[in-house]
Image 1 (cartoon, one colour):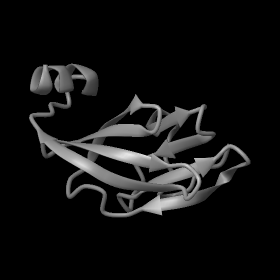
Image 2 (image 1 turned 180 degrees about the horizontal axis):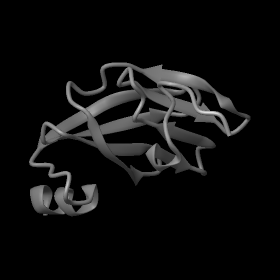
Image 3 (image 1 turned 90 degrees about the vertical axis):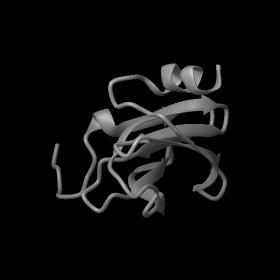
Length: 111
């Protein structure tokens, strides 16, 4: 397997099988990339400057949404548009800790 500067490692992937997508972070340019199941080698969509800080975790939060935690303590809830391979920000929450999972952090914030 070849790796290139800016490519994500497998631990940076979030697989969403019902949407036929995988989402990756950890790229050197700070982008988040969406890959379709039909061509996993080429990004179908790229979201740049998703957060000002480094993304520390991603978790699926519903059938078509993800939660993204960053090193600045913010959680972003993003809507996934599978047909356009796009992400759109729904809301932002504070109080994320890289030591905790996004689900546990959301439960603390909103529970």
